[in-house]
Every structure is written in structure tokens, then in C-alpha cells.
Image 1 (tube, rainbow, N blue to C red):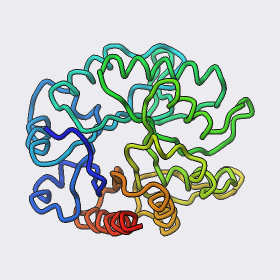
Image 2: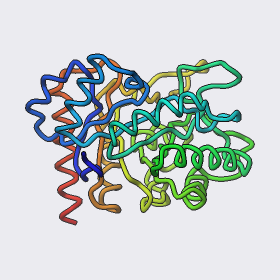
Image 3: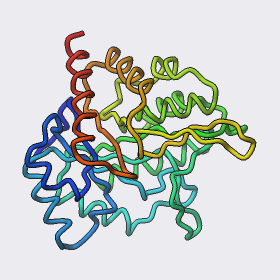
Length: 279
């Protein structure tokens, strides 16, 4: 079994691309969503077992609701532990967000205010996940569409404090940085300069779409349904110039194209990663 992700390009696995992975090109590792594989058997697990024998695997969770006020769903966490035990992936990550409350589950990853109380809650949940899974987890920076008036910490200060208190790692989603900066009127390059890059274990690159809100003001939506935009590629170059090569995922979850499209974006990421190694 693989024990770490290589500092190269990977893609989010979709079952329609299973046969394409016989000739993966610049794709050297794969990421799967945990909740799709919390099963006892069947063709989906058989497919994942086959892939795990050929590729390093990263597991990306979307359902733990790390930022929720209530305690974590222990049954969900137990199913996740079972998946981790037999798959032994190279990496596990989740989101700095909440998605459930009082028995209601939302089909979205909702943002948090950055306060001392929120930090205590998230730290407690991260500690619990890491203890149950017996491994370090990565937490992904969110895409933001508004400021919380109650926030007393910047996002970077919040993440740095979280890493310091729990020894977790971070997943840096570069598209989320760009989307948040555009929506909130901040500088994405300054955000990257201040980000705790030493804690990053994985990078995500994805697409977004431009829409308007109810006041006709422009807003960027993190959709994972479009090609990676040129300014996101440029921001990724800035990251690699600072950090050196890191495991980098091409993330495309909606309106998924042919594998050749994903592989072409993986090849572009691979080129930038080689350039970062040279620097």
C-alpha cells in the first residue's frame, strides 16, 4: 500500500473514467470522496481496490460537518474508520465548514465565523477525528461569499491556530482562495503569502462560474464544473514558487468531461510543478 502522496498531479476519480486509467498520462494519483465508498461490498469497492493497487489514493470527506456546533456523528465516523482501515489511503482530508444541524443535512458546505468559540469547537472535532482514525487529517480552506460581522480572527490566523493546537495539516484549495478574494474584495496573493504553507499536505485546483446575486452584483461560485481559470493557474504558480512541488489535484465534480480533458489539466499542473522543483 502507498503511504504518501507524490508531489505530482492527480485527479478526482469518476467511475466513467475507470478504463481510461489504464493509460493515465500525467495522472499519478487519485482522490475519492469518502461517502461514496462507505459500503460493505459491491462493484464500487471492487473498482477502488483495483485502483489502490496501482495508484496512491487520497480520501476526501464531505459529510463530517467539522464546524457544526453539535458533536460529530459517531456512526458516520465509525464507517469512515472502517474505510480507512482497509484502504489505508495516503491522505485524508475534510472541509472547514458545517453541513448538518439538529438532524437536518444540507447539500452544501456552509461557512463559519472565525471566533475563539468556533476555534474551540473545530479543534475538539479535529482532535476527535484524528484520534478515531489514528492518523493526521488535512482541513481545506473554504470558498467564501460574505464576511461574518462576528469574526475576530482572519481565516489564516484561524487556520494557523488550528494547526498549532491539533497538529492537523491543511489542504490548500487555490480556486477557493481566488473565489473568496473576488467575492470579498481581498488580495489573493496576500492571502497566499500569509498562509501557513508549511502545514499543507495537498493542493486542489478547480473551476468556478461567474453569476450575479439578487442585487445584480457579480459573484464567483465554486462549482467544480468548468476548466481552471487562467488567474487560478497564475496563483497556483505563486504557491509553488513559495512552497516547491506539492501533491496537486484537478477537481472536477459536476458536468464532468472526458478523461482527456482532466489529463490535459493534470499535464499543465505537472509542468508547473516541475518548474517549481527547478526553482
